[in-house]
Image (cartoon, rainbow, N blue to C red; front, side, top):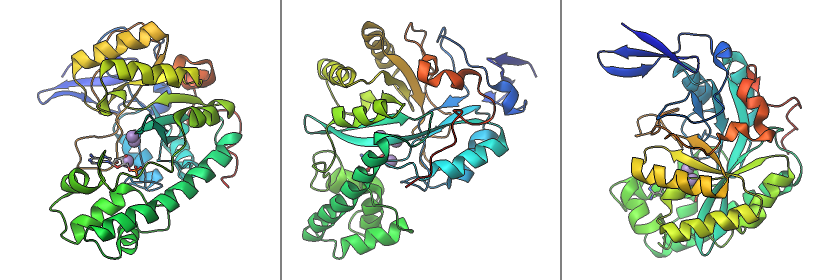
Length: 338
Ligand code: AMP
Ligand code: MN
Ligand code: MN
Ligand code: MN
């Protein structure tokens, strides 16, 4: 069985195809390339969810899974919260991989719900503390509105039912309502719940509570973080409108875009790379992993094309990420989550 190393991550050619194998202690495999110079896969995943939002795995179990899959660098990016980061950073230290604290902010732009990944090397600090508190309150109020609407459409006690699906006391999201709709037999499956009730443009897609994208990007940048436009190909925008979104995002101080998010069409990815290069934006990558058994897994995403767009870890604020030792990124201790 032949083996080769791509940026210190061992890849084994097996009869079943190419597999990423964790043969080295991850701490040794922590040097990242300075450019995306060929169609390639990396041991990095900068967009994943845990039970702190709508993911199925605890932060510890997520980190363990990432380590088992050979990842060396990961970001925890739960929806509008960094509550899972402290636990994840302890697990990352144990597992010897580099964790970037983060979250995925819900925002609004031209009536569309746009997501911004906040990579926060210094942890939760500055205006982000207040920003996440605002997001938490927005999510609580929004859940009440979603529940009222679903009650009118045939799901009595919607709030209690979604709460029961969520378990714990974290603020609710649309996935909790989707599970309640399935459990009550209102729809056959999760996809049907979004298609009929919760997806873009449907009654349960309540966005009014979210801040304008510029405001949210402002929090990130003023708190020592790097703002990354999440999955730009998933909003159903024309190329021109997507360009306008990127321009607005940049004017607010955003500097990175997810060039690869999960599985993407290679032509669309190459075209997106050209748009990033034109704008001198950094390129990020992530699986948007939520739960085992789905099409996504930590570190599983389409290959990054050869591009002149610099990897997000080349951003001065993330410089430690390139050759960080194991554990949490950044010299400062994580501020106590309020
Ligand atoms: P929320 O943060 O409450 O707006 O919920 C957004 C989350 O719902 C996303 O991050 C996905 O996990 C999930 N989601 C959104 N749209 C869909 C869809 N069309 N199908 C399945 N899941 C979706
Ligand atoms: Mn989600
Ligand atoms: Mn998202
Ligand atoms: Mn996500």
